[in-house]
Image (cartoon, rainbow, N blue to C red):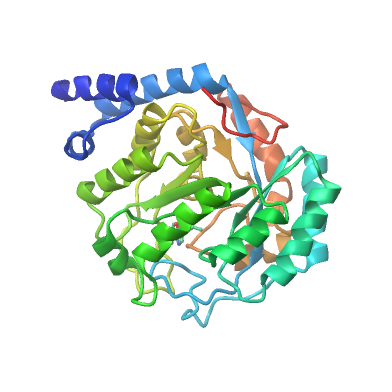
Amino acid sequence: MSDCVHLVRKLESEHSLTLAEYEILLRARDETLAAQLRERAVQVRQAVYGNTVFTRGLIEISSFCKNNCYYCGIRAGNLKAERYRLTTEEILECCAEGWELGFRTFVLQGGEDPFFSDAVLCPLLRQIKREFPDCAVTLSLGERSRESYQALFEAGADRYLLRHETADAEHYARLHPASLSWEHRMNCLHTLREIGYQVGCGFMVGSPAQTERELAKDLKFIESFRPAMCGIGPFIPHRDTPFADHSGGSVELTCYLLSILRLMQPNLLLPATTALGTLDPMGREKGILAGANVVMPNLSPVSVRKKYALYDNKICTGEESAQCRGCLDRRMQNIGYSLVIDRGDPKTI
Ligand code: 5AD
Ligand code: FES
C-alpha cells in the first residue's frame, strides 16, 4: 500500500498516471488506500463543487431495444421483458412535474427504439426547450448516425450520454454480439464531441471478464477523452440474460473508482448511480462520500418504472418512488450535502 501513496499524490497533482500505474493502484486496493483516495477526492470535490449535489430528472422513454447486449435486461432477445414507450405528451408531463420539483436537467433515456426517429424526437426537443428554456436536455438513446446526432443537437439537445462500456475492444466483444462494434461506439463518442454536445461516457464495474487491466484501460481512456460526465455503476445481473449467473460488481470498487476519477478530473460530473443504491441501501450516499457530485432521480411515470429493468431488483420502482427527489434530498442532507436547483453544467476550472 505505502508505495501507492506516491501514486495518489501524483494523480492529484498531475491528473494523470500511466496505464501500468492505474493497474497497480487498482491491484493494491485495500480499505486504507480506499480511505486515503476518498479523503483526497472529497477535498477536491469540495474545492470545485462545495457540498452541492446536481440532479438530473431521468425519464425512461422506451423499453424497446433493437440490440442484444448480453448484460442488459431490455435486450431484444429477452422475450419476457415488458415493453412500453412514452408518448410525447407523457414525456412533456414528466418534464412539467420535474420542473416543479426543482429539476433543471431532463435526461431522456431509452433502448435503441427505431420508433424514436428524428422526426419524433426533434419536435419534442424543440417543445421541451420552448416550455423549459432554463433547462438542459440530455439524451441517452444509444448509437445513431452523425446526421441524427446533428439534427437532435440543432433541435436543442445539450448533452449526450453514451457509456463506452469498456475501453478494450476484445472485452467489448465478450459483452456484445458481433453486430455491435467497439470501434463504432468509440466513433459515436468522438462524433458527439465534434458536434458540440457535452458528452458523457462510462462503464459498468464488475462486468463479466473485467479485470484490473480492463479497468486501467477505462481510466486511461477517460483521462485522454476528458468527458464532461462519466457514469459508472456496478454491473448487476438480470435473471433473463446470458449473464444471469455472473456475479455483480461491488460498491467498494465502484467508490474506489469514483475517487480516482475525481482526482483525475476535478470538475468531472460524476453520478452516484441508481445501481449503487440497488446493491446497497446506502450506496448512493457512499458514492457521494467517495467524490461523486450528481444524482439522477427517476422522473418516469410510476406505472412504467418496473418495466425499464436493465438489471434485477432496481430501486425506485414502487409507489414510494413518486417523489425520488424528496427522498434523495433528505438522504443528501443526512450526509451534509444538498441538492441544488441548477442545470448543473460542469464548472470550468
Ligand atoms: N447492470 C448494471 N448496469 C447495466 N447497464 C445495462 N445493463 C446493466 C446491468 N445488468 C448499464 C449500461 C448502459 C446503461 C444505460 O446501463 O452501462 O450503458
Ligand atoms: Fe427513489 Fe428514494 S430515491 S425512492
